[in-house]
Amino acid sequence: MIQPQILHITLLGATGSIGSSTLDVVSRHPERYKIYALTANTSVDEMVQLCQQWQPRYAVMSDADAASGLRSRLAATDSRVEVLSGEAGLLQVVNDEAVNCVVAAIVGAAGLVPTLAAAEAGKRVLLANKEALVMSGKLFIDTARANGAILMPVDSEHNAIFQCMPDSLTQHHSSVKMINQQDSAGIERILLTASGGPFRSWSAEQLHDVTPAQAVNHPNWDMGKKISVDSATLMNKGLELIEAYWLFDMDIANIDVVIHPQSVIHSMVTYSDGSVLAQLGNPDMRTPIAHALAWPERIASGVEPLNIFDVAKLDFERPDLSRFPCLRLCYEAIKRGGSATIVLNAANELAVAAFLDEKIGFNDIAAVIQQTLDSADITEDVSSLENILEADAEARKISNECILAMHSSSRV
Ligand code: NAD
Ligand code: MG
Picture 1 (spheres, rainbow, N blue to C red):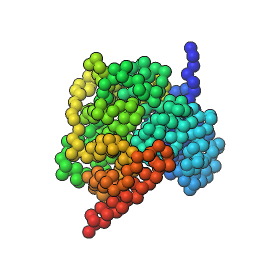
Picture 2 (cartoon, rainbow, N blue to C red):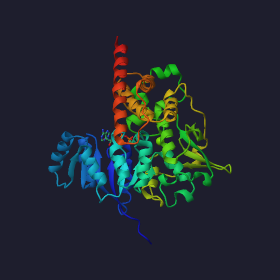
Picture 3 (cartoon, rainbow, N blue to C red):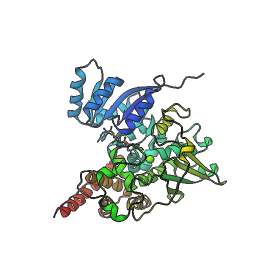
Picture 4 (cartoon, rainbow, N blue to C red):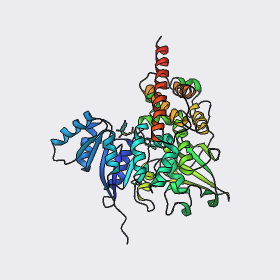
């Protein structure tokens, strides 16, 4: 039997929800996966523990203070982990020749530079950081393709779509190589499922008073705070629509968002012969992570198979764009093109952070995004990282002003 190639992994965002699910899957297959580098923002305590457990070659913290904190804590142990910091540290552990797999699980725009670098270095890239793809779109896909990267979607919906694609497209290729071959494969539509979040049936008035604690309490999935709020506003589904557009080269008019409260079907693909293929499973990110790690093989993930008799019932409905305007804004931004999705993403990040800080209300998130999109210069040329980062920085300035104005008017 041919032994699978050992994956030497750089895990970006090791202390997060996806990070810990990845480590859980990896721990079940020590003969297949080795942790080469772990990265985190500033959580020194958690990284001390992870470094002791995993003994990676490198650990990377976002800033020099956190790095020196980690270094001195590890010096008191017998650890030989080398601690790096900042963007240079991230780029070093992504580009390192000893690494053949990068798990991109940093949240938000902060993940863009290292994730894009992983594509450029031709690694196997497990993409959870959807914001990186929303910001860089064509540049990311072109870079991955030009450098022979294997791009595996980790987001449960995109992983499900990948699984529902025909073997003729996926067998020897990653998702980036499917592009332009769908006509002959008979693929007609993508049905992107959404749980609808915790406020699926709430009225606009009720949504006005949503608190951060209510918004981060997702009914089906256990996730980081930012994506939990995004799920509550349906921004997450909008970002995923943009993600599907780029990953599968699918016209936005051929992607339907389907509210499916049970979160059992993780997405579907419709074919020209009338077949609709779906991927089902318990809502646990270890399944798509295991799939993306092992593909084209299958490995145990620790997730129990779905008990179809317990599920009993599957519901589907259309999303309500008036109560959930963030999803509408995503449709508009992808149609507008150019830097619109970069502006939308930046405004959303700041608005969500301000909502979690109790500076603005739940419905203000969409208002901040709308105002930022209305005021920002939408540029057409987003073909370079420099232009993308510039559009992101400008949008952040505008959103900040918007949030300040809303916050001060709510206090008078
Ligand atoms: P999280 O908040 O739990 O973890 C985020 C990780 O990124 C942490 O390790 C944190 O230290 C690191 N990080 C945060 N800011 C950083 C910065 N400025 N620089 C460097 N590192 C930084 O988030 P999560 O829920 O694990 O989500 C991670 C990504 O995966 C997001 O893009 C999210 O949309 C996507 N995703 C998550 C899930 C899920 O179930 N959690 C599902 C699908 C996709
Ligand atoms: Mg998802």
